[in-house]
Amino acid sequence: MTKTDEITIYVKTLHDVFLKSVRLENLKYAIRGPVFDTAQEMQAAGIDIINLNIGNPAPFGFNAPEEIRQDIIANIRRAQGYFHHLGIFPARKAVMHYAQHQSMPDTQMEHIFIGNGVSELIMMTMQALLNVGDEVLIPSPDYPRWTSAVRLAGGSPVHYRCD
Image (cartoon, rainbow, N blue to C red):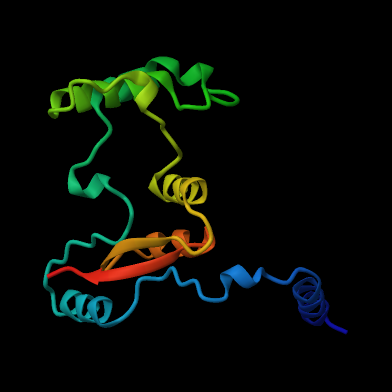
């Protein structure tokens, strides 16, 4: 028996022991379909495409505020362990200031929760708010995480077309 055979048997055994949850059966995350295919063809033809599906806001000018960047630099040596459960204070403060300057003057620190990214926050929010069978309106085409998060939380996504 070769090492490859041993690995194959081990992986098959793990698959048999650790079956994935039935909740995952109807979930799709990859961004595919005619829009994606057309975008790929356009890129191959040399057309500049703005990929709004990557989940990384920085390429589109949504950078961390200068206040947060400076606080990171100043505190990097102490960046060990866990942070406050609502998020890093300087980040929350920067979000509060931004919101207050964007016509939301009543925004306070206790209104702000910072997570590790939008995907984590979407999942947590759907799990906290949805009961089994709750319907959630989702624009289509959508960011697949929205539909997956609703389904994982027991909800039913209801897509509506964006023109």
